[in-house]
Length: 386
Image 1 (cartoon, rainbow, N blue to C red):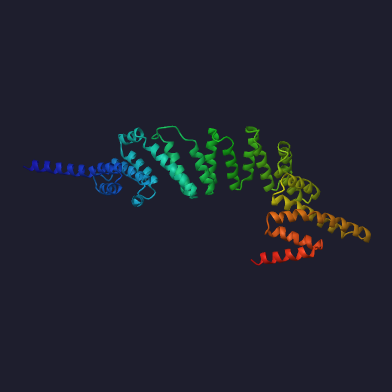
Image 2: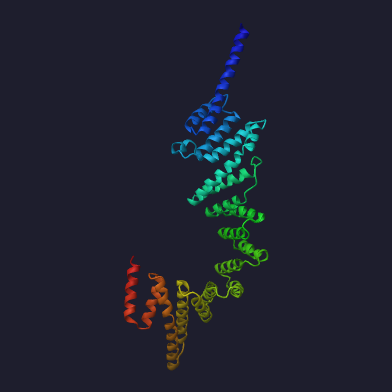
């Protein structure tokens, strides 16, 4: 009789375990039906019972549940699982860890569970990127990469995911991570020269202009026909104050693209900053001839004439002979007057620009155009009080 009661106890224990594990089977069925509220109730019970809380199938079902929460269109289910895709991945990995025989891993591979999860992570990351949640996008793309690089992923690796992760990393200021992902793209030959430019920009983001320069210099050999390499070098040298290097590459760029107004503008500004006014005027004039509807080159050319005239005034003040002094002042006024049409055009293109207005105020004063001077002065006073 005693053995009989022992047997009954064993049967009772077995049925109890089966009942709790049956909750997991029920949860999987509810997930398939889209009844996520019922699936949640079943899983909550399974996760609190000693016989099922550490069962690999419970974690597998939890992964399926979290993934279903992400995929559902029903708003009342959306709060069931915070960070559903990250939680799904963690649950699947825990299920594999708890399954010594590898049945769950085989099921994940056979049913392409990680392929589906990777696609969901791409969708989530893309949405986060569009919403400018770059930290969230980076996390999504990084998890996608981790999944697709694993032996549980059944399919070819999508190279684009490294580029996506790199872009997300750049946009949240994680330049070292960005460099890592773009280097992978470069090694795989993805997007041609573009990953190298992204690496260059990332080094600039880190403030490492030496590394940035070395990246660009290497591209001249790898992509000799790409004009943007030279343009980026020019930009880098201008920003770094290396005017001689910038001018050297501007010669190359203008030979390749002689009608590019921006090249003449860049060279003109370099000369202007170095007080080489005649060279500045020559280049900026050509820039205006090629594109007369740009504020920057109109203002730049006007400024070049003003600065040259101002320099002439300074030198004239050193002349002791009255007649020679008067002639020098007249020459300076002629140059000064040449600035007027360009500053007026700059003002047309950007009417309330404070810098163009201040220049016009000085020009009208010196040229004794009183009515225009008074109008500009009044406009400036109004703007400066705002």
